[in-house]
Length: 114
Image 1 (cartoon, rainbow, N blue to C red):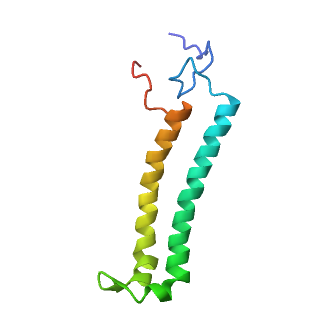
Image 2: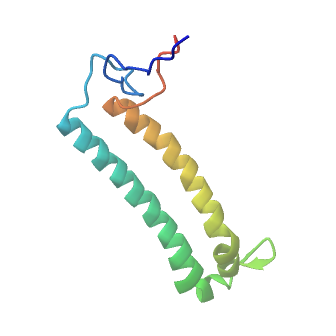
Image 3: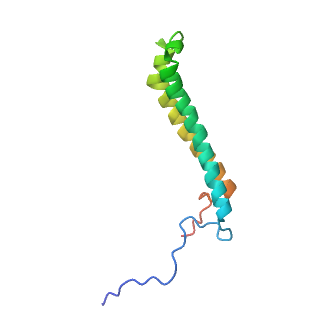
């Protein structure tokens, strides 16, 4: 048997091309990225305000309160900011799915007839 090199006959399909009839226009793509960046900016601002603001700037004021037997400022700096960051990851995943469906770039409805 003689082995012949593989020759590709057609273009590769897009891996997320379940919307064959819809093509993401330049305007739609720009709107999608703007929505994505707005979401990221909001979530990172929340995390920054909590980790830097409450964990560093307001720590002395927050230390007058206790949380599970620890000073609140200390707890936020050591644990709270981490918990909020993990929660923000889940919030981002949930919201980005909604944004992707809105702009037609989601991959939830991929064709499974492979």
